[in-house]
Amino acid sequence: MANIIDGKAIARRFKDTLKEEVNFLKGRSVKPGLAVVLVGDNPASLVYVKAKGKACEEIGINSFQYTLHKDIAQKELLWQISELNNDAKVHGILVQLPLPDHLDEELILEAISPEKDVDGFHPVNIGRLVIGKPLFQPCTPMGIMKLLEDTGMELAGKDAVVAGRSNIVGKPVALMLLHKNATVTICHSKTLNLREKVKKADILIAAVGRPHMIKGEWIKQEAVVIDVGINRLDNGKLVGDVEFEEAQKRAAFITPVPGGVGPMTIAMLMHNTVEAAKRQSSGYR
Ligand code: NAD
Image (tube, rainbow, N blue to C red; front, side, top):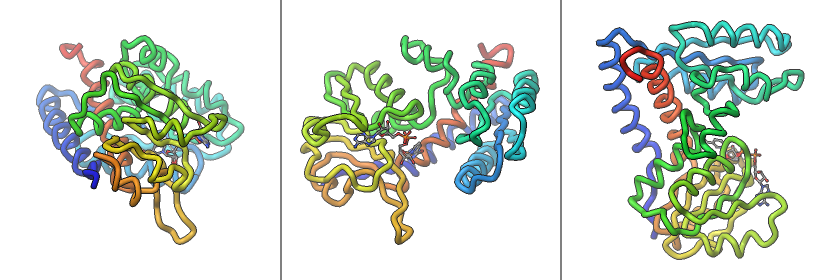
């Protein structure tokens, strides 16, 4: 029976350490600040933004929330970002995705200064990740790597399979695994025979967004399974991409949904914000 990777507890530990670090910084007149920009009233986004605000409060990070009208002109949003780029109290800027259709997401993300891009989505930060010289890395993949680290498993030489190739999860986590010397296979919607690939995985990262699409009997004995998927069933229950009960019988370690990757994402956002504050304050470079 697999060990359950308790993302909630691991995230708690991270946040406790960050809290101490923030206290230390405050003693030196540095108060980390995170600006969260929400456009419109997407209910899921509202929940995420609220959770981020709560985490800031817990840790002692200044949280600046901007809720902008769903019809805001692109020019106006760009102006708002430029104001935040120039605001010394704001060390990290996050634009909550998805944006309404009339806004050019790429252009908006590129407008954030790479030094304040705590979501790690700016092309400069993605490029730095590619060459193995990261500044800010995307939070969910970073959280996944911390969970893997917590298992104590050596990643070098392991066969890792990443199901999903999004810019926010699949691609960056594949790069991070590669930098740890795993042999990485990236699977996606056009991949043939996913089952055979999963069966060979010492490490499986499931980031597709389809309930239980990865069958428990595909899991290799003693594999580490990180389930990123968050899927709500008709009965309201939240489940991952992996058939948990069956997979648990074969894996050495597995994350639950909820309580696995989710809490780590916010903890890593807080980590990036504290790092941004340190970088932007003289004496901490
Ligand atoms: P996405 O929709 O952008 O990407 C899904 C990926 O799955 C695509 O790259 C696609 O090619 C791939 N895919 C589709 N069908 C496939 C198949 N049959 N076999 C293999 N790959 C297939 O999704 P995303 O934004 O990367 O998110 C993935 C899941 O992770 C979602 O459930 C999302 O809610 C969840 N998520 C969780 C967190 C968290 O903090 N826990 C953060 C981000 C995303």
